[in-house]
Amino acid sequence: VLRARLAPAMAALLVIATVAHRAMAPIVDAAGAAKMGVEIRPAPGKGFGAFTTRPRPAGELLGDYAGETLTEREKDARYLGVGERTAEDEAWLRSRRERGVSLSGDYILGVGQGLYIDAEDPAVSNWCRYLNHAAEPNVALKTLPKGMDGRPRGWFVTAREIEPGEELCYDYGDDYWMEGDNAV
Image (spheres, rainbow, N blue to C red):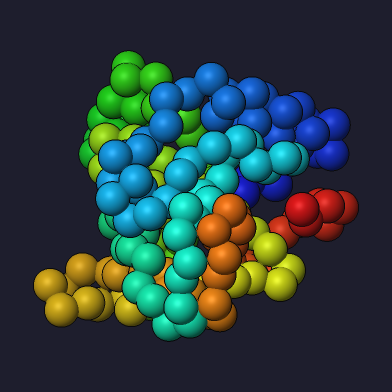
């Protein structure tokens, strides 16, 4: 997951604006979540979260992290403004702006070998984008830079038995957090 480095005051405003935007935005793939026995609802201090509606055994497949595949160069140019932007990058940014898709970088998942899955665009993502961080997670993330179909893959499995009503969370890892962040 990627977050731009901003001055502390600007970072605080970005977090507030991002949480407010997410609270107003329609839920992505609510029907897909319901089929998997998951409810997307507000998670205190986190925006939306994914909550199980049924008991789950350890080792159960929850779902794949769906989104657009990005290279490290594309991620850096599009989200951080680092390096030269190509005509394709500019068209991508224009499309996002025209469709009202945010550019926070909060939904980027690194899968290795300089490849990422970007679930920020609701048109190509699914309910797994609502899995939040926990220091003591009940979900594990698995990744492959090249899955069976040749594309990067990220997927989630339960790390322990989970009771109905529990929020499904995984550990975002040390690379996500910036100095001064208060992980919820």
